[in-house]
Image (cartoon, rainbow, N blue to C red; front, side, top):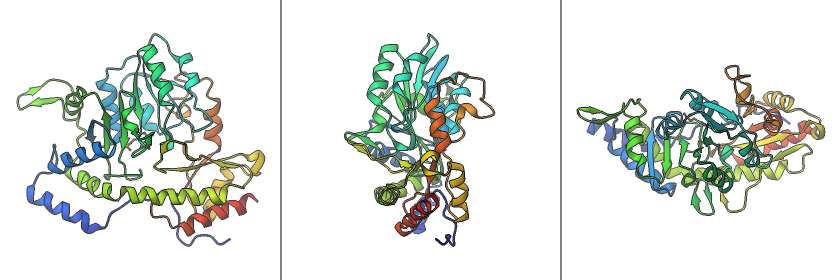
Length: 372
Ligand SMILES: *Cc1c(COP(=O)(O)O)cnc(C)c1O
């Protein structure tokens, strides 16, 4: 098969028709209100809470600082159980708060935290679990809740990949103490950069708002040590417009996913995640697992071969966080058998809401040709 003339990247940031953005930017010009709880920020905050079916949503300049502030606000101490199969941000947020990450393995069904291995990692120093709804697949929420209750632990979900996901009709942000969503350019839904903390406990509203604005609580009062993590009006404008386009984008991503599944389903040694009953998915990523024993080709070889066809995939997530230069050997990372297995074999294929289905079909056919 012929290579693609233009490179196909693993994702492409969604941009709305530029006129829609300019209209809102003109409003910002007229008001000269650029940041600090501007009207667009407040409107977006309300709309996101509605979209996520959650009592409270607070906006931040990015997802990482939102997670950082969630950790600070819940006063975590000692050890935090998390997984190494995620983006650097999750562990960095733990470590930069002076906490010790304890790496738990993932399960083979959807690559989220293996709930059967959590309790074995709990010590008297454990204060929280920070699981990840990786690739937008929900963790085993009910088991995590049981374990957290039994051992009196906080739960902060890294829901960076899971904007719009629902479990039996309930917005995914309703679980745990707090959930963090990322609105980064590369995510399903973006505000250029942006982050959201979603939660039901209204007492946290003031804490989060104070932390994100230098700890300032009044014209002449600063009650706590804080940082600057506010979302500005230009980000909020993009967020407001993109929210209107989101459902169509998710529908398009669904079609991309179904096209991949259709062509890839009979290729030996190539497997992928299916939709789960009761879950409203957001189709944020399309990971495949390459089993060399059956496919005759390794993940790394497939990755390189696809580049020759102008197809740029990602080894997402490889390496595991526990193997990063900055973490290797420093923290408990025993018994990560599944995480290592998946990390060595995973490849995420190109997916975004504007990827033509002919291209998707061709990418899948090329994989078929390469393997067979
Ligand atoms: C993107 C991402 C983050 C960080 O979000 P930003 O908005 O980029 O700061 C955290 N965790 C995971 C799993 C992510 O993919």
